[in-house]
Length: 103
Image 1 (cartoon, one colour):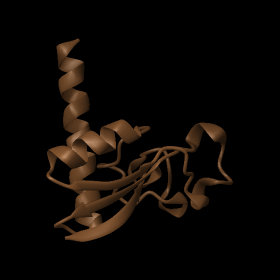
Image 2 (cartoon, helix red, strand yellow):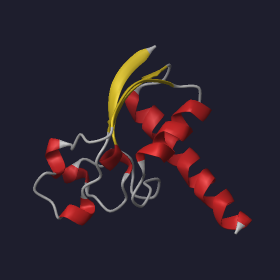
Image 3 (cartoon, helix red, strand yellow):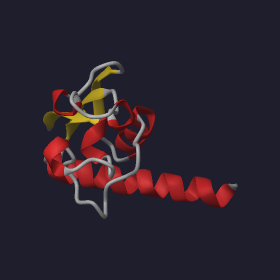
Image 4 (spheres, helix red, strand yellow):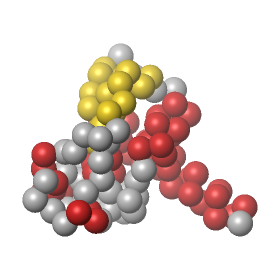
């Protein structure tokens, strides 16, 4: 199992790669919430080691307040960081799709 840090901004479609987005633009999610990331990771069988709600990724400190997504997780996964982030982003998209259908 591998441990790594996941910042909410790494999945945010509004950010460029320069400011920390790690997944491709077509997989990224608009304004991901820490709760969604936690739920997706748990659903995928990943272990949440630590949650820091008020942490801000240093890469986004110079950005506009609306683009700053606060929150950091330490996750333990059997996959590497890149694959784990892609899986989490896909799962969040599924959650959001199913919520839209229910309305």
